[in-house]
Length: 306
Length: 236
Image 1 (cartoon, chains in turn orange, brown):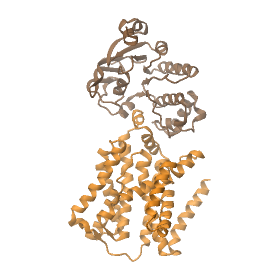
Image 2 (spheres, chains in turn purple, blue):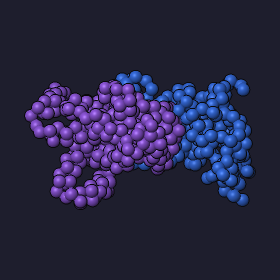
Image 3 (cartoon, chains in turn yellow, cyan):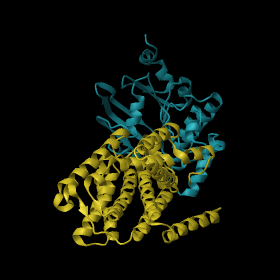
């Protein structure tokens, strides 16, 4: 069983590793985007799927990472890789500043405060136009090949998966789940909920920070409206819920299936595909709030390690 | 304060808006005893539990545990000092399994924690259901699971908020024996209970609350003969 799983993992990783040499540029680009969504959905899962603190402003960390990296690349001439790593640090610092007061808020109040955070960060980015280019944004010199970004984004998606695996199978993760299940009881049983929520939030913000840096390098042009859209947060949430919140592979499944579906629907129903996507959101919430893996987990009594 | 008390509540008050839930309440609990807190609905028993465990912040007064002041500490620090509790409205972790409900609060290493959790589940007769989500258990089973969970953190002072509610007769005897075992093992138990038979059976001392104030205290026999207690409970 253990060896079988190892063989499958190695096969998938090797396949994805050599794939760019055998497929079209379109497929490579598309896979890169799936990697991006996997990393983002896993990051949302870490705070919201595990502790139940629903973040409606996760794209703020993505945008912060994107701008940090873009500024370091254009103003200081940094390579995009270290620039993106610094982007994740900036995002984590933002999470520390905002998480300390906001993680005391319960339920919808936390969600709304995170929505507010996103608007504040976007306004700040527009305001400091000498650094950020204001509304017209920052343009990076074009890249010859996206191949390094393909591997970098794949690496972050894998890192997100490994961090989630490690978290969910550890005592730390079990304690995060107890916060989601009943925070008052968890605290009364000696679990330091405030500190644990903050740790989870920091990890959860660092991931989109680095993804944002890669994204800036990938699209070569960022501006406030396109870098902080609410729809990006909502897409993370839907992918995570669709696959199964609080599970390890749920966000991977959700990100992959919904990306494939969107690509398919977009090419067939140019004007209608967003309505279909919206309908899927409603159906998922109504019919299987635990998501695909959540349902399978309960029906077949799978261990938590899925 | 005298060091022979495990818990001392001094002049504690708590208001929610215009409602005074607890009014200048004082009680002293000696170690190694089973002590009951009784009183009609709304008399402030659960609020007092919440104040002692830090779930609510008090407006006035002081609370000491083993001689140290604890009323400014967050709940998890109070728990780690050795006060454990159950809740009147059950608060298990519904989407964790019965076993995980115990493991998650454990502070010892994984191996001994696992052994202890299985021991406790067997003790409350839930070992066959260890892989079941706590939310799928019956009301009485969830109460027993909460009881096992508080034992998991091995507190010196155990606060039980209506532990007998919803538990059938045969399990109730086991539960009462378990509570007596706690005292035999050197623990102190503070219990809120409406079932007077349970209170008379178990406790060595009773505090009676009414409208947030302490009405009287004493042994079960003396308290039940007190005119004011009868009046508070049954009206005159």
